[in-house]
Image 1 (cartoon, rainbow, N blue to C red):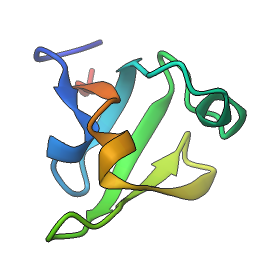
Image 2: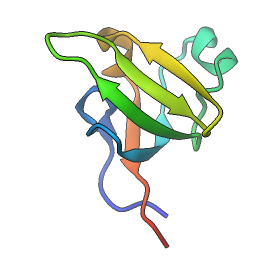
Image 3: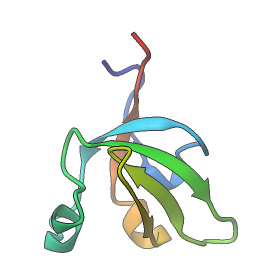
Image 4: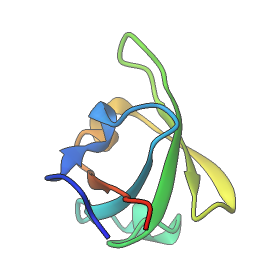
Length: 80
């Protein structure tokens, strides 16, 4: 299911599909649907320290600031 070692979400490539490997202990993230194993697609990572725009489970978009995105570990999804 996974290909490479985890990277932080802020380093993830645009239009890539990933699975959440770990998240910081922030309740708000879980209430927004970000849990270990959640599939996300990086729609855009804005330059100069801007936010990361995600598609969560193919259902809704979510923007996270750089400081939070750097604390979320993801693994690239592999097509089977």
